Amino acid sequence: MTDRAPLGGVLVPVTTPFDPVTGDLAPVSLRDNARACLADGVQGVVATGSTGEASLLDEAEFRQLVEWLRDVVPPERTLVVGAGRESTRATLEACRVAGEFGADAVLVRAPAYYGGSLSPAALTDHFRRVADGSPVPVLVYNIPKYTHVALADRLLSALADHPNVVGVKDSSGDLKNFAAYAAATPGWAHFMGSGSHFYAALELGAAGGILAVANPATTLACEVWDAWSSGDRAAAGAAQERLTPINKLVVGELGVPGVKAALDVVGRVGGPVRPPLADLGDRDRDRIGAALRTGGVRVVATD
Image (tube, rainbow, N blue to C red; front, side):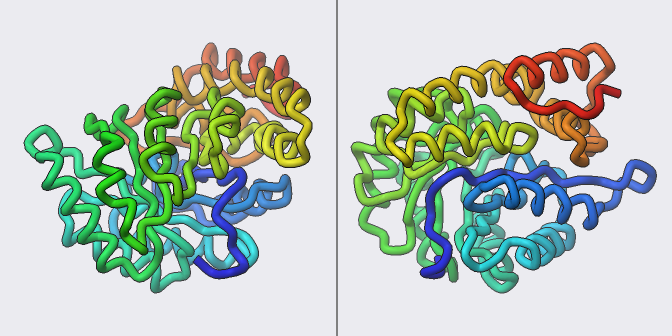
């Protein structure tokens, strides 16, 4: 991390736009979406995360995305890059590339394919070796919905003394788990990965949130953070009450296709997902538009 890019606040894990005809990366749309989120007040951007369809990208695309986003994210804001891979070797290479192209930190998930065969000691060794070799600080990423590997708080505790592991993103959706992480690693930056639990996580000492719902509902997510930071818990709680139903539908129920559809609905570029993911139909898009309107998010298109 640079001194000018504090690790905290609302970070938006941006989607990866694809050309609707060729399926290739769409750099203009990527930059436009990121600029819009930054203008709306987020403290930083997360590239190539779960919301960015990271597992569906090749390594050349990964490099381009990091480079393109670093050009957009100013040095006083944070660029975090998802760098988890299936082998320790490949993860280290992704961390190296992320650092070379200007990442402030990397977000590293657990390996998934052999996850059921990995002992706690093997997982701990994986993260420690990644942290040893990464040129930029590491955030551990707990996302059992996709990896089917739930990282125990004792694993994080075993990494707590590593100088290059600086935080964790918990997307389990379990506040007890988040609290256990905070207790196990008091010196880390703890990020909530669920937009439905952002306010509650701040009550538990979170440094911020890495929130997929902040793609379409950027201002609303920042409203929770800004009100909390200014000491207005009532306003923060009221904003959270508007944010939660949007998150439950768009992110919790509909996933990445829901986030991209919601971006289209608010006038940003969502566009198609990459197969084997499937785009949403008109009925779900209408539901998204209704949820955004109810939450006070400006909707400019529902087609």
